[in-house]
Image (cartoon, rainbow, N blue to C red; front, side):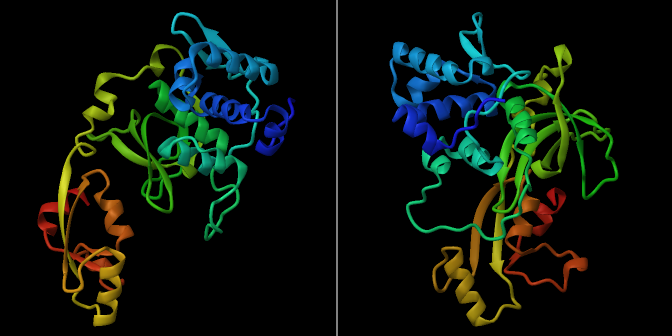
Length: 297
């Protein structure tokens, strides 16, 4: 197996080129391809310089990529790919969402930082990469999924479409081909998807009705009219106002959220939606327009 380099080791060998090699490796692994245009967009490299950088990457990982002449890009060689540098699943998802960041790879925060409640091996980086490559290439996958609301644990066919982060869990939105109900777009937790593999040949291609543009809930913004919960004392209300950027005399908060994500938000923000089974829970807000929102909860 080819040697796995730390980012620091790579810098010691190739200097400033380390960031570019790391970017190529990252793009290959988590999107499935790298184009010279990607290097131009990320680093401002001219076409000739981008070509040289891909050639330098080949010196380290010759078998990781195959040139696709018809599409003028380099694609991952899944049978031979081995990472050049280690990238954690959360690191990768964060960079896919917010952009490539060499400081994430080097482990050099600008200020002292620590994540609370680190769970080792919560996400399998290889499973995550199979899902994110499917999003990038607009392909379907087969996987097993451990659902908290269903006993359906048989393999299912999904079309992953987007990534989400709720501050606790990494989630992907997908079209569930295995679902028998009318509405088939759902949210899936990355950590619960196992035995992920791409669906080959024509069955892996995405259909128009499976695209995110056809996801009615995803594309429907809902207004949420929130009010500080009446069981809060004055000190609690003052703290929550600060937490949510409210004025000192404000009791109401108005926002819009995708209909596909409203349920998640009510749990994250401790919003009372009038469910009798949750009457003993601590709530920060009441949902004033609950009748309007109820069909989406």
